Image (spheres, rainbow, N blue to C red):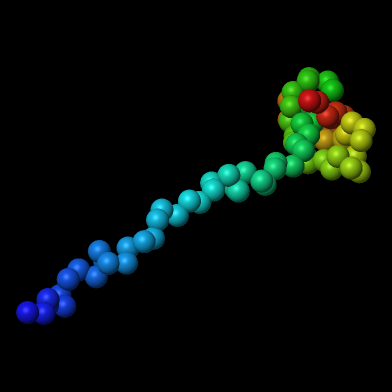
Length: 79
Ligand SMILES: [Zn+2]
């Protein structure tokens, strides 16, 4: 008596294992070097900018409007 061909197919060739996926790949995107620009008068950190380490080696200084001093002041990069 031949066995009926109605056996569950998934039980025969279910050799696939778990797919191991590395979840660390997304962390390769390093944040750019963020420079914080602080007002030299009130010391508040008003602005941020990105710097390129290869081209910008010295500290960044920019004249920007400080809303706390209500005028344009020199903002220097702080760590
Ligand atoms: Zn200020």
